[in-house]
Image (tube, rainbow, N blue to C red; front, side):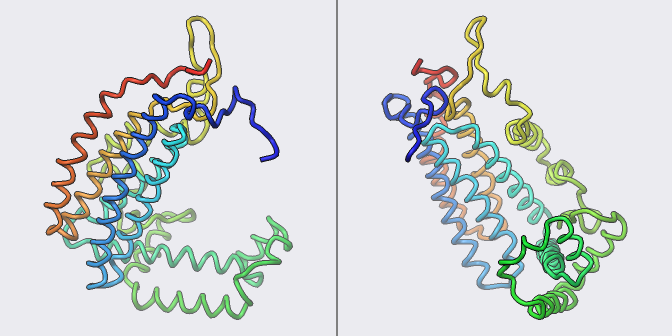
Length: 318
């Protein structure tokens, strides 16, 4: 790198030079990495089950993959002491968890809700293709906002190709996902403009908080998702960057792992719930393996995390 960072703002060697802190961060990161590792097995079990049936397994499979990517990034951030950015990933993981819960919440609804999910995805694709087409009203509005030059190097293809792709999507919506598309249109007529979430169809939850209520997980929404909002959107920067020292205030440097142990515990607890519910719904025969892993690893690891005493609330380098 040509430019060295200002050490008081960002010291990339901060924890490498302090073995105790580095050991704790590696321990926390390894704990999350192990949970991700188990998640890859759950993903594989679900993928094998999905291959026996139909595309209705795609939404839960891909939501699980999204969940795993979010928490895998948490292990990378933890190893570098960057616990604050973990909250954005955790919110993404929580959204995936709530959607998975709703997909699986009522026996007999999995296929219909999976089809609703795919139909909403196809509707978004259709809108995107119309936006790319300069001959459509939506395309004209898009260009008036961004300018013609924005799309000069687009790899979407010729206009004829866009039209053909739109027709293929319309055909799928009218045949494979006809019932879900009718539910989409009914919802659009009632609610007007705005993004349609798949779980809103058929008089479903109108928002994420209602989704959490529908699956009896409002506590998780309020305690974790809602409380992380300030970190994600920048409205809690004063309490997160300033540190009190008696009567003085000072700015924490970047990569100060405040709350790292709590965030690690949240990842582990939420992941175990996610894996358990997926296995119960799709591959109940794998439950003994999950329970054995939980007893042999998770319970012991959580106790160790609770006993971590290293204080991350102050700058040990100063």
